[in-house]
Amino acid sequence: MSNTFADRLATAMKLKGIETPSGLSRETGIERSYMYRLASGKIDNPHKYVERLADATGVSAHWLGTGIGDPYDPEPEPTRPRPLNAVMLTHVTVVPPEGDWYEVTARVPDVFTSEQHKPRDKKLYEYYYVPETIECFTGFTLLVVERELRPGPGLFLAQREENGKKQLCSFMISYKGLDQTSTRQPDMQTIGRVRIMDYWELDMRR
Image 1 (cartoon, one colour):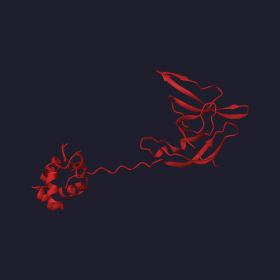
Image 2 (cartoon, rainbow, N blue to C red):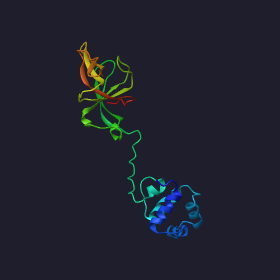
Image 3 (spheres, helix red, strand yellow):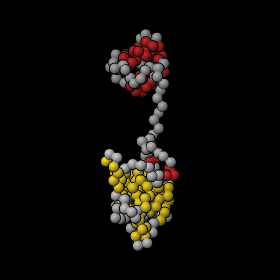
Image 4 (cartoon, rainbow, N blue to C red):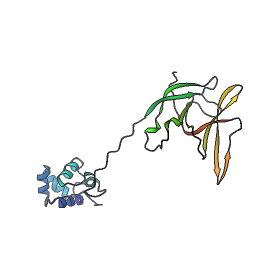
């Protein structure tokens, strides 16, 4: 890596066969006095002229501007911006403190837009929402649950029957060496592993 912009500019000029800053000034249309200041290191990085200087000398603008890579490396592809506050519409099961569970179509965080998220099949994910505090979750809790039960530790969502009504509950699985410990009770029916638990104000319109 060349240490300074002046070093890289000198390398670029040599590769192109341009002998003097005046010659490069004629090639680019950049003012001669400014070009001499670039060549002498008095200007660290002329951001507005990097593309023009790279075009004139035939080198990579990325290398010329940053010193990363080699003079003839291809330009890196622009990074796709991640949508801010990305949401998506999907079915959500609402679990009120009393009464029957019901479904709504609502906007939830779209984790699949994140490059850090390693999506599996979207169809394996279900969404549960707790609008008010219940025994195992506080109010305004959104749960993203993976239905596929693969081995491993974690927090799991479950349901149980109590007085003829479905109740939402949870249990933990942990490992110490090869020994597995589970807090699951016999009356719990496993829904899936909780992948994301977030504080979220859901639009409750059905």
